[in-house]
Length: 167
Image (cartoon, rainbow, N blue to C red; front, side):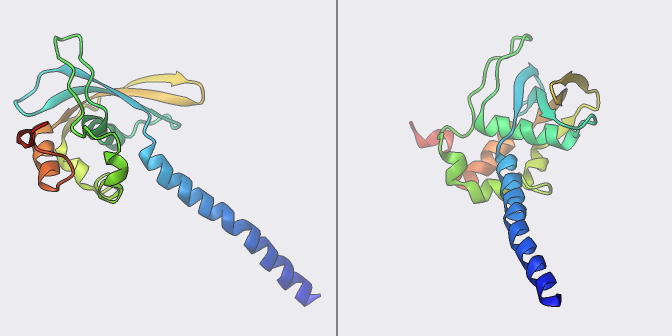
């Protein structure tokens, strides 16, 4: 009887192991699967973008750290859509579509909760618009990003090409 219990526990443990690994892989995938929109919200100090950032989450309470993270992510990978205040659209700093995969290890550390992305987020407005959608919330706020410093640091790290490197 005792051997039967041990065997059943071992079988259950083996069945549960793939579930734990699957959850870990999903968490890693979600870190790269941002769902957000960014748009120019006005002009800021030279070398910065003032952005209107909309991001989606399951919880009712907005995570302002996530707003800063997706703003920096958007400046690097998506570019900035022009706004109503006469803001022109701006291209992404990372022009290579495969760059996010090429420098995956760099960006995994960069966008970690205590990663370097935070030093480029100059301010996040605590005023947040909330809209309830199917199974999730859409949060919109204003974020200011130090785009010139971000560009210089990514160039120094060899992740993006400098403006003077030619076309």
